Image (tube, rainbow, N blue to C red; front, top):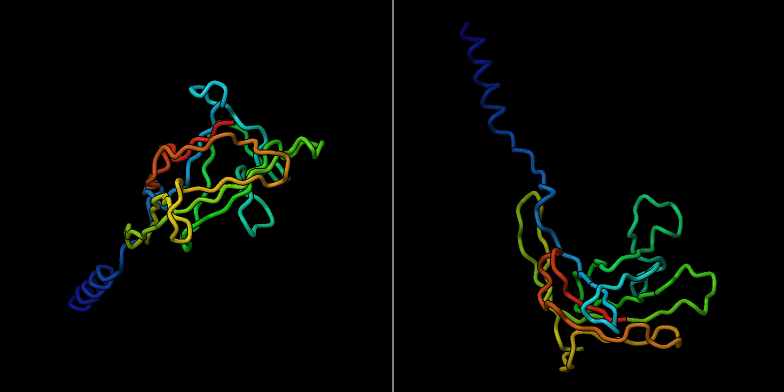
Length: 185
């Protein structure tokens, strides 16, 4: 009987020394993406959906995947009035080419603009299971030189800018449930 009790005690103490499962709750906020909302330049209070927008990061061969279930080129395309894109966590700027109507068979109908976002970033400890997340502050400095905006907009293909205006709605990128950048086209 003493052996059984001893074995049960050893087994109980052995189980109590196990670590709990470290699983990050999917609802835990992680590193947020930059949220861009598109508006009609002729009627600024009206949302305007983009059509077949492809977003390609500098030095990327393919674009950001917006539709993981697609198996063809359409996985890189999005249509809608809002898009969320990641910022680099190990740099102070991220550059994207935004291609409007990117799957149009008429190449001349496609239009590319390049946006570079300047920011500072800070790593924040979330938990042992989730690790760290990075938050960003859009920064009106470019390589340490003050500029009027935390972004630089250039034409990517000599077709003229399809983006007419860019406004910063929220300089702090801490959550994904709010617009950070407004684009009027």
